Length: 361
Image 1 (cartoon, rainbow, N blue to C red):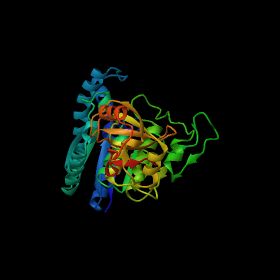
Image 2: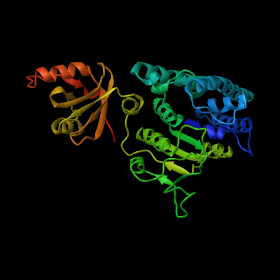
Image 3: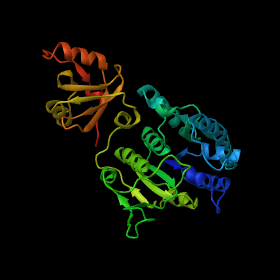
Image 4: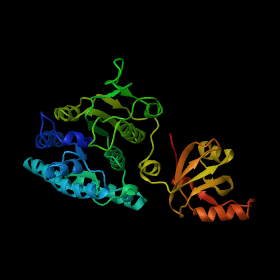
């Protein structure tokens, strides 16, 4: 038995000359049911609310203003769920709608609640259909793409594999539309090297989606850090999902990292929205990186932003490189006040405890 998370992009669900939206969802549902009958558990992270809302309204272009997008998402989300429910029901399975925003993962408690809900639905043999809650979320609360959300969902349920279905066949060393010497990248063992490289990150080649290659690389990095294999595959032919669920591979496969992190550490590193930053000295950064220490106030040199206690912050070393994130036990105001009034500490206060701190790979 495997736990799969399958992310389906907007550009796929809008359909093509070969497959209508209904045909694509019908074929995907058929493949998912076949895998479930083999004993697998599956969560679908489905984009498409805005795209399908535009179809229902007869709009040829996606609006740009937030109010129109939220209203269109409300129309499209209902239609999207009706299609999944229609075809899953034909095969005797129930679906459940899960709408999430960044705020739903902003506390450990809410993150655990989302995780437990998803796991309970899987226990009941229900297929969760997850989407970002575009109808109410403002830009600050949005992940902005379902690639990132799918990776966070995968880590929250300790999935085995994540499938990113998009409208490209695989990752390339450069844009194949512009470079005849572009070579396909079949296997990736270190996503950080790709993110730091010059691989083009602009493309889904569509105005309808909100992601791109960059978000897929980031999603792959989040998932593989937690030991999850990731497939990037061309979903324009819906039969590809059947093949992957049956043991084939996507066009590009991202392999799990040798050194993985826990779901809690993944939440700290990727799910939270940092409210500020701390710049620390060499001694403090060395203690965090190599000695498993907590961050003490004596090591803090500069505070950026305004945050309260128990809010997430970025941590920068003496070279100005972000290398960790954590939950601050003191507010930015308290830290600044203490540093300004007392630069010598008999016993330095803990700013971030090691249990709520994670080093970034």
